[in-house]
Image 1 (cartoon, rainbow, N blue to C red):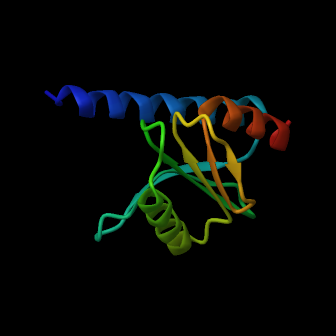
Image 2 (image 1 turned 60 degrees about the vertical axis):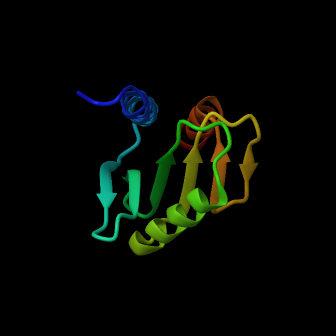
Length: 117
């Protein structure tokens, strides 16, 4: 059995991934979805291959992702050539720096609908 804190994190990540994939499917977007973890423990919770572009998603339960979270996301995304990087958390402060985005789930789902509708 998973410790309570870890179980919450796993459920949150799964929920966010389901929501992202649902929006992409509803928008009739052609994509492949992957998970990535390297031998040195860099990971991407969801990697979306759109054919001509790759988008990397790191999902955090936190309300305030750390600079270290962004560094790890960028490192893993660089390894796979992801053009866009999304750090999805429960933050109230949305930062869209083009290539790197820090956002909450509602903002991300609206963004995906706008991009692929």
